Length: 396
Image (tube, rainbow, N blue to C red; front, side, top):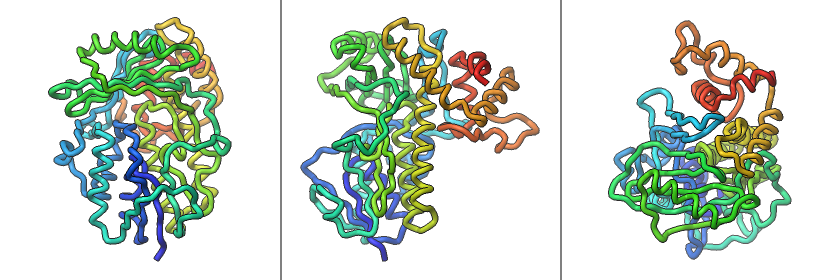
């Protein structure tokens, strides 16, 4: 029987541990330093997460209150595109939902559940080298790399800093993650049971933290939120590894990548990297294949992010001039035959209101063969609502 080692106790390490215990028959050793506080990042999920947690640890919606969770119906986009439109990227079809969660409580919940598995051994240690671990396979979820020499730095992602505020309330006031376009970037609002997490993402080369702290006050007023003293501000690099799977080692979470958190892409990547690793362990996929798919996934996320910046904004600021330029470069670089076909398909059906299903066509005809979004509805919604269909057609 093989032995798997997992390093790190953050969201990526927790999800990977549950995943590998469920889908392999290996013994698992989970290494983390209890003196290091896990990062509380990525508190919105995709549609796949509820199913994954149900399959791996028996999580059901009745358990939401254990993680301060709330139902997530999708993402509300406010003030985006040339005309500053507000639109919804709802989950498809009606009746499918995900959830928002307190990252620290989800990590604690997973730890309590997987600890019941006799194949798991938890080792309190600060691992400095993979050579210190005796295991056939290692999943490294230990946090951002000390150096980026083994990583690609994203050419297209626009923001590189964030200022986060926790606004406490008596009950959640909305059921969508909100992505609110702002003069110097964009603001996420994530509704949890007892608080709303509000984060202003910006580029520190164009705006100062003091400018962000002043501008975010408009968000508090618009959504009737009261900011607390619980704030966090930091700068970050946008990166992903050149080779995510190297021999017996795979990387996940911030040890693998960080790209700006549009559309809960971090959770999406954590899920997929764990699946690739399981198939490698079971000899179903090769290292080369997994690395290629990993790079494709990262490029697709860059594209999904870039499409938000491509049309520019109603705000005429230095940030948005820079952002529009990056968005244009991103879209032009990813103008592949598959993407061109997708654009033409949307053009031919732009007057059809129902994005989900067209009589006479199979579901596979509505599953795009390009990009981060697997739903035709997602692509059609964003391209039409951002007002970029005609501009994209000119590039085809």
